[in-house]
Image 1 (tube, rainbow, N blue to C red):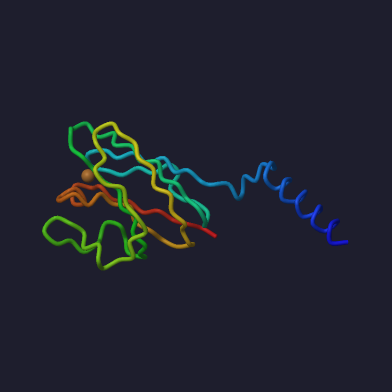
Image 2 (image 1 turned 60 degrees about the vertical axis):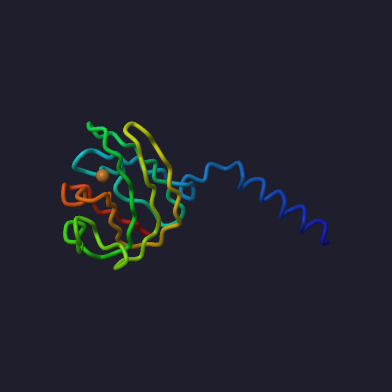
Length: 138
Ligand SMILES: [Cu+2]
């Protein structure tokens, strides 16, 4: 009896492993950093594991970074001190730093439903427009 249950369990697990679970698959968001913008594609994801693939596509030779904050605030109205968003005021989900010109880095996060903002917090870059909103649905 136990053997049959165990076999059924193993078979079910194997079936799950090969089935195209599009609704549950990891979601990759392609993020383009430019000199004055952050452009995620797409701009939303379902809750769960979300992988941001961040590319520094800016023209200049400037290094950029990518920070994910959890907040209901408008991405254009975050508190700024000396050219940098005050990250300590928010729940920081994760970041990738030191993105050289042309390079790509990945950031994989487990995100709950809600509103987030994506910023580059190199001094002055937020104020130059490197921010956008990101929504995680159920
Ligand atoms: Cu930047």
